[in-house]
Image 1 (cartoon, helix red, strand yellow):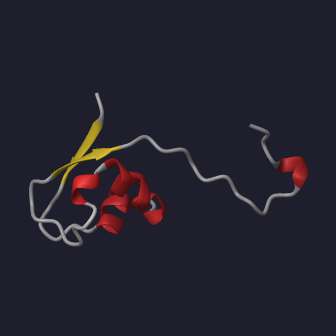
Image 2 (image 1 turned 180 degrees about the vertical axis):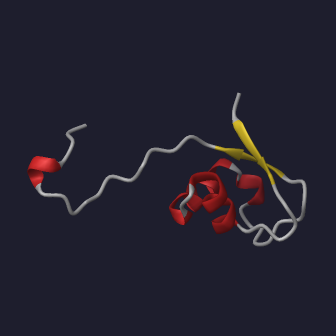
Image 3 (image 1 turned 30 degrees about the horizontal axis):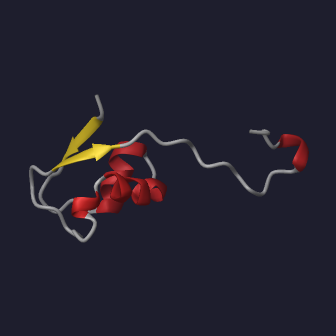
Length: 70
């Protein structure tokens, strides 16, 4: 079963991302998981959004010996 988030009046994508993931970085993942709301900027209350599982970003500025090979 997928995780969900029910919006509060005035929620915006970046704020929802921060509430759920503690980072605005995942805003695009949220939008992609909820394409029916992609044009919504400010949400009304009680919209149920799917919250996808995300992987933490891989730093690109690490030296080669600290990079994890996938």
